[in-house]
Image (cartoon, rainbow, N blue to C red; front, side, top):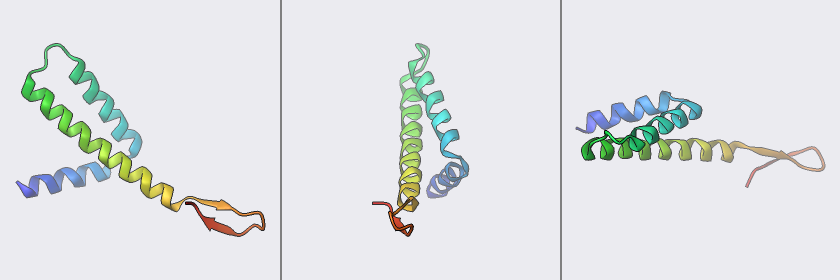
Amino acid sequence: MAAKKKEELQEEKKLSVEEAFAAIEDKIEALDSEDISLEDSFKEYQEGMKLLKYCHEAIEAVEQKVQKIAEDGSLEDFE
C-alpha cells in the first residue's frame, strides 16, 4: 500500500500547478454530481485534498525563491 502512495505522489509531482488546479476543478464537478455514491465522493474528496496540498507546497516553494530588487539594485530574498 505504501508503494501505491509513493506512485501517486510521483504522478502529482509530474503535474504543473495549472494541471493540478484543473484536476481539482474536475473533482469539484464530480462531487457536484447527483449520481455520485458516498464512496466515490469520499475518494474524490481525498484526491482533491492531496492535489490542494501539492499546489500549496508548489506555490510556497516558488514564493521562497522570489526576490525583490532593492533600491540600490542588489537582490534581496523575498520574505
